[in-house]
Length: 574
Image (cartoon, rainbow, N blue to C red; front, side):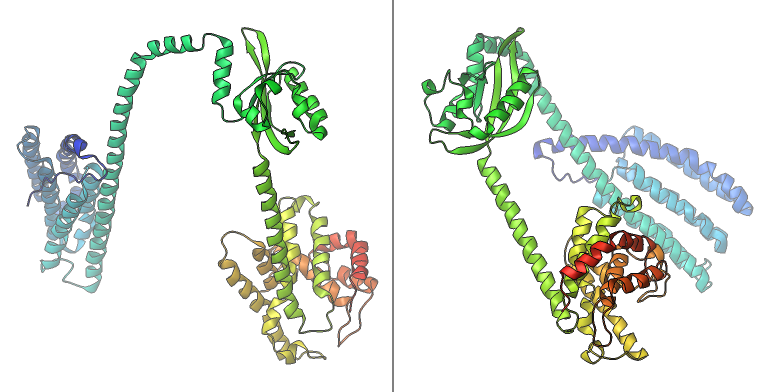
C-alpha cells in the first residue's frame, strides 16, 4: 500500500494541481518535524506520571520512553534528509508511541486504564497537527484504534477478561477513541477544504495582481486619452447625460431647462428644440408645481442635495406620470453650472405597489371572514349566545388599547399585537366543537362529571390551533389564538383550568379575553339565567380583581367601562 498518496484536491484546476500538491507536501513535512520534536521532548517528560501512578514500573517505563525518544531522533534525521515519506514517518511515530503506551497499560493490569489518556492524546495531537486528506485520516484512525483495542482485548490478564465492570472500562475507552478518531477525520477533511479555498483565492489574487499591474502600467496613457476626450465641460456633461438611462435635466436658478439628455425628450415625447429654454414647471402637474418650487428648487438653492423626491409630470398628451427625483447643484471651479435632476418614471412601480396593497387587503379580508365563519360554526350550536363573537373581539380591543398605554406593556402591545388579538379572540371557544350537545346545550347546571368534560374544550381548541400553527412558518395570529384557546379559563390566583397557571404565568392575551368573556357571559341572557345589568357585572368583576382576573386588566376595564357599556348596547344581544 502506498502510504504517501497525493491529497485529492476537489475544486482545483488541473493546471494548478501540482503546485497545490507541492504546498501540501511541504506543509506536511514541516508539521511532521514538529510532531517528532513533541514526541522526543514530551514522551520522556511523562515519566513524572509513571513515578506517581506506577512507581513499581518506573525504571521499565523509563526505558520504554527513552527507547522511543532515541528512535524518534533517528526518524527525525531520516525525515530531515527526506529519505522516507513524511506520512510514513508520522504513522510510524504514532503507531510505536501508542503501542508502547498499550504495553504500559497491559503491564499495570487492572489499574492501567488511567494510561488510556496517552493513546487518546497521541490520536488528538496527530489529527490536530497533520494536514491529512480523507483516506490518510481514515487509514490512520483504523491503525491507531487497532493498536489499542486488539492487544487489550486479547491479553488474558487485562481488565477486559476479568469482570464485566472492567470490560465496561475497556468499552468506554474504545468508544471515546473511536469518537475522537471520527472527529479527527472530519477535522482533516474540513481543513483540506479550507486549504483548497485559500489556494484558489491565492491563485485569483495572483491573477488580479497581474491584471492590476498591466492597468497601472497603462494608466498614465489612459488618463491622457480621457483628458483629451473631456477637455470641454459641455462635452463632458453631454457625454454623461447621454449615457445615463434615466432622464437627466440641467436647470438654472429659475427652473429654466438649460440642457437634458435624450431620455428626457423621449419621456416627454417632444423634440429637443421644443423643450430647451422652457420652464421646467411647464411639464409638472399643476397640483405639484408649488411643492416642486418650494421643496425641490428652494432646497437646491439652500445647498441641499435632494433624494427620492416624488411628484407628477406631464407628457405631450398631458398624461401624468409618477416621478422620483434625485437632485444636486453642479459647480465647476467655483462657478455655478446648474441644478442637475435625475428623474425616474415610477408609475409602473407605484401601480404594482397599489395592486399589492389591494391584494393584501383582500387576503386579510378573506382571512378574517374565513376565521369568523369558522368561529360562527361553533357559536351556531348555541342559539342563545347572540352576537357573542362580535362583542368579545370589541371588548378585547378596548382593553388591549388601554393597556398599550401602560409602561409595563409598552414593549408587548404593538398595533400588530392588538390586530392579531382582535382577530384571534373569537377562536377562544373553538374547542367546543368537541363537546357533546347533551352537555354543551344542557339548560340546567352541569354535574361535576359534565363540567369536567366541558373543561376539555380549552385543550381541544388549543391543540387544534397548535397543530394548524405548526404548518405555517413564522409567528402568526394563530400563536395568540392558541394562547387564548388554551388559557382563557385560567384564574389569576391559580384556581383555573386546564393547567392551574397563576399571575404572570398566564399569557397576557388570555387574561384580556378572560375578562371580556366573563363580562359578556354576565350581561347576556342564557337558557339557565337572565342577563345582568352593566352595573351588576362590574361589581362582580371588581370583586374578582386579583382572584379571577389580572389586576391590570381590571384597571383597564374600570377606565374604559363606559365604552364597554356603549359597545354592549350598540351590538344588539339577540
